[in-house]
Image 1: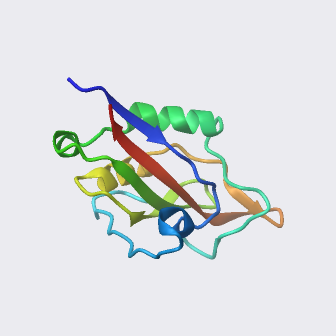
Image 2: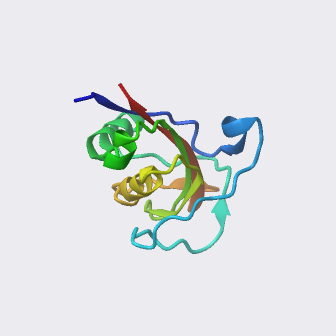
Image 3: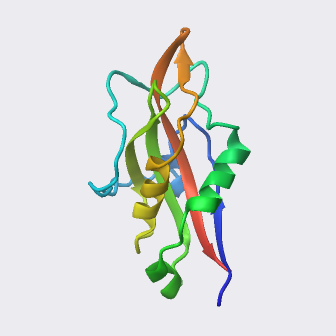
Length: 147
C-alpha cells in the first residue's frame, strides 16, 4: 500500500491567495457542501488586523491537528490525485471558523475534506483591532501528496 502524506503549507493569516495560485490569475470559488456546519459570521470582516488570530497552541499544534484529522479521500488516492487546495475562511470574533470558501481545488473530495476539518477545528484566539476582538479572513493552502 502506498504511503500517503498530507502536507500543510500556511501562506499567512491575512493575505490573499490569488498571487500564490497563478501569478495573480483569479479563480471562481468552489462551493462548500451545505452539510458542513460553520459558525455564523456577523459584522465586519477584516483583512488586516493589529493582532492576528491564533490556533490554540500555535502553528505547530495546527499542523498536528490537521495531520491527525484530515483523511485523504479514497477516490483521490485511487486516481493518484495530488495538488493544493487553497482555502479562505473567517476566524470570528468568538474564535470560531465560518465562511469556509475554496478558492482553488483539485476535486475528488479534497475540498470537502478540507472544509470538514476546518469546520471541526477547536476555538481559536480571535484577532484584535483597536483592542476589540474582530472577525478576520485567514487564507491557506493545504497540499495533498501521495508517496
